[in-house]
Length: 204
Image 1 (cartoon, rainbow, N blue to C red):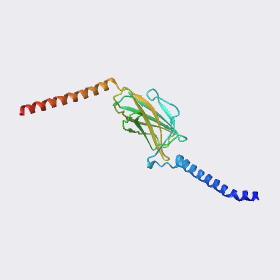
Image 2 (spheres, rainbow, N blue to C red; image 1 turned 45 degrees about the horizontal axis):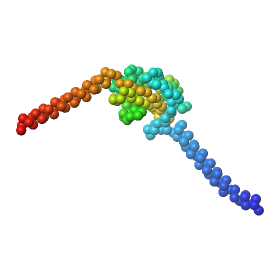
Image 3 (cartoon, rainbow, N blue to C red; image 1 turned 90 degrees about the horizontal axis):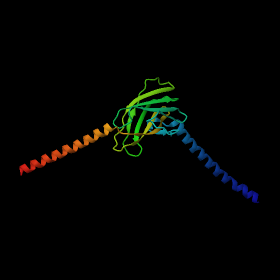
Image 4 (tube, rainbow, N blue to C red; image 1 turned 90 degrees about the vertical axis):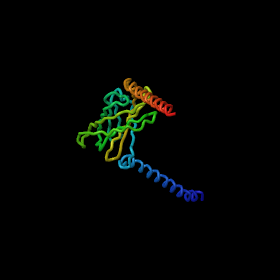
């Protein structure tokens, strides 16, 4: 009798477990397909891959794996300082990009997005391509500014990206030039106010 009751109680429990298992499988498949295959570049989403290790761009080129899709290497050429033209060199391997861009953003301070679109002369089917461009970092009054360079590679599978952190140090000449310009503005404003006050006194 107890055995018959147990047999009758099992089917609903088994049905519940089957439903939960199927839901789990469907959700897992959705995320796998979205992550690896769908990612249509037209929707603007970027699949980010964290760099394998820390790397200082001011000292050497930095590389990162884009999951199983390929690899990117970024190097900056020139003085890494604000308001100075900066050469950007990206090498892609194992992936066929439709476009490559590099965004510079402040890590601890909102400096806006400094975006650079890169170009290449390599064949589209090449396993290894070089992309070149030029960018510029925004000015910050602090002695050291923390930046992040985000590489975004547009492919037929979608937009794939990684990033590298680095610091910029303003050149003394740049800082002095900006300070001189600010002081000149203040001097011109004081002269304008003095002339205005003189005109008012003369008129009265």
